[in-house]
Image: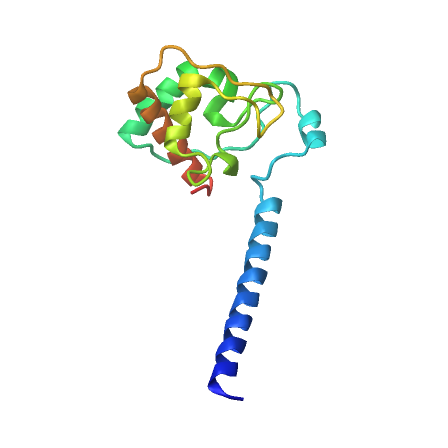
Length: 154
C-alpha cells in the first residue's frame, strides 16, 4: 500500500473511533442518575416531592453562601430545597439540563428577569422573579454551580 492509502485508512479508522466513542458517551449520559425522569417515574413521586437527590459540598464559598440564602428566600419555594426540584411544581436545577454548557449563567439572569416558557420539563412556564438584582442572581448562580459540581455536573 502506498503512503496516501495508509493516510486515508488511518483517517477513516480514527473517524470511526470518534463516532463509536461519541455514541457511547451519549448512551452513558442518557442512563446516568441525572437523566430526565420519564413521566411514569414523575407520577410515582408525591406532589411536591424532591425530583433528584442532592449532595451538598462540605463548604460553600462565601459568595455561594450568600447565594444559598437568596435561593432559599426566592427560589426554593418552587425549585425545592437545595434546588432538587419539586414534583408537579418546578424542575431541579441540580441536573445536567442546567449544566454551564447548556444553560449559561446569563440564561439564569434572563430567566429571573423575563421568566421562561416551559420547554424541558412538564411544569409549565416560569414567571419572572421580582425583587432580585443582577448581583443577587450572580450569587444564586454561584451557589447552584457549586452544588452542581458536587453532584458531578460541570
